[in-house]
Image 1 (cartoon, rainbow, N blue to C red):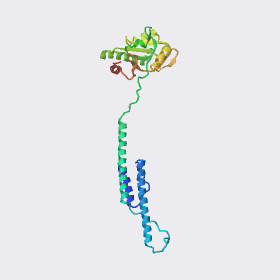
Image 2 (cartoon, rainbow, N blue to C red):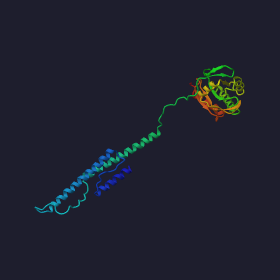
Image 3 (tube, one colour):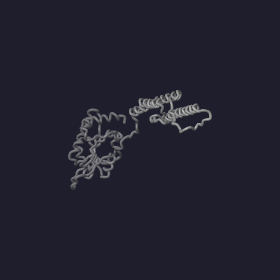
Image 4 (cartoon, one colour):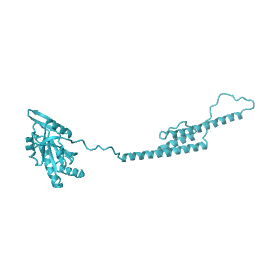
Length: 294
């Protein structure tokens, strides 16, 4: 608003001093309003210049006698124009006032649009459920062939590791076993803990059987051929790779994640190494309550 007033005061000052601008720069106004403004200014200036020329001609004729020629002496300098007529001034004031009001209205509208755009969060398309999980065919620690369908109707917590793991896998499986018992005690919910080997070359059925019994009586151990393990690892987005291989002695680098699956064997949430047993149990109970309609 203040910038519009400054432009109008400057233009009015130039009118009262007798100078008539042919073009006025109002970049903040619309093109049509600026054109009308400049047109009025030009029309007023042209009208006043014409009046000056008529007055000068009349004065010249009055000073000459009969029969005298009009072409006497050198051409005189044009006389500087006087103030604009009241009608032109009124039209300029009305146009300038209209431009100021219009500019102020557009400015307020633009500010309101910015406030609205920053306060309203636009809803984007839902990303849906993460593409984790899928069909698999493995062998459990009792030598029985199983698929993902054998776990339908139960909440399942899956961990990938290997039986020769020196420290991380034992720590994670102990945490998993403790969380399963806590969930049973606090919420009365049965969780099926599952261990899937990522070392099929050494983790035989017998090896896995002895291993899982060290952590929890309900822990299900699964193993399979290299191709079967590769398939299930790909389905659950699990990374694993042999490292520091020296003959038959080697370690397996792998993802350290637990996957919570609902009774339809659909992925719900994963829990990383940063969860302790209490936080893991609380997190799983929360997810199950939020998905109890599944």
